[in-house]
Amino acid sequence: MKKEIKVFAPASVTNVSCGFDVLGFAIDWPGDEVILRITDSPGIKISKITGEDGRLPLDPQKNTAGVSLISMTENLKFDKGIEIEIHKKMALGSGLGSSAASAVASVFALNEILDHPFPKKELLPFALEGEKLTCGGTPHADNVSACLMGGFVIVRSVNPIDVININTPADLYCTIIHPHLEINTSDTRKILRKQILLSDAVKQWGNVAGLVAGLMNKDYELISRSLQDVIIEPIRSILIPGFNEIKNAAVNAGALGCSISGSGPSIFAFSKSNSTAEKVGAAMNVILKSLDLSGDLYISKINHEGPKVIN
Image (cartoon, rainbow, N blue to C red; front, side, top):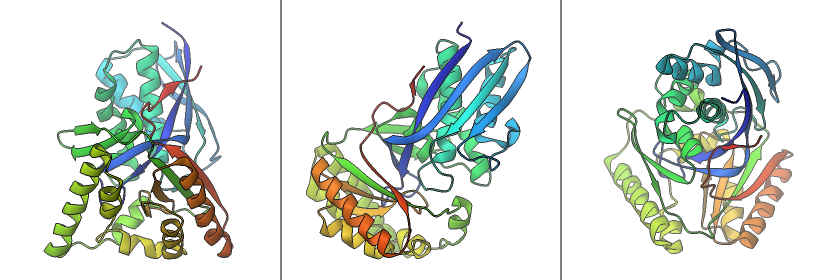
């Protein structure tokens, strides 16, 4: 058995406009890196966290990566010790699955170093235990599933866990702009409406079905028509300065559609070529700068690999 391993787990875009808590996909960058070591001293120790110094707890019972590892080691009845370093390469509260990436990286790393006691998909319950820390005890599986499994995922059910990967067009590109703001997922859930109109629900269901069909059939016009959120986006977009202007700029630059990534403030747009994705990014960035906001810009295909060993 190896004594040390280093892995990378990618960021993810979730909700994907109309698919609140049930749709998500992984992107190439950013992401988190975790170094995991097997030690002779029993227990789990988080020895270092970089990138978010002082903001994340070293106590494994209060850290998404630590809680995920505790769940996995208890299942395995693992009697050795584990030391991990977490290197955050993405901001907290970005809407890109930062907590999910740490949780996934930790359990993926242990599974790799122990020579795969679990098929990758069976790591989901352990990573979900970590996600409970960030969402008040009721985990949503979209970020964790997309990050762990790679590609584009549908979360049909959380209890029991039922996640499906679907095919997507090879030349579909995603542009993401991350304004340097922080939005807490639990806070954005509190402002959502507790009741919705049946007519809005029917529109939303139709858009989810249309988006899935469009992705699987490589029908860009259907994808574009289906990237509409009539329930969540109108509420959450209020918290993102210039959201409507950024969205309009993306569509006018050629994007198929544009919406909030996760709970925000990151905003994503789909395009059917890399060149269009770059034009879309430039247009989105112009609006962001006009608001005197800085941000990060990412352009990626859908990442079908998910987490990977990098050392």
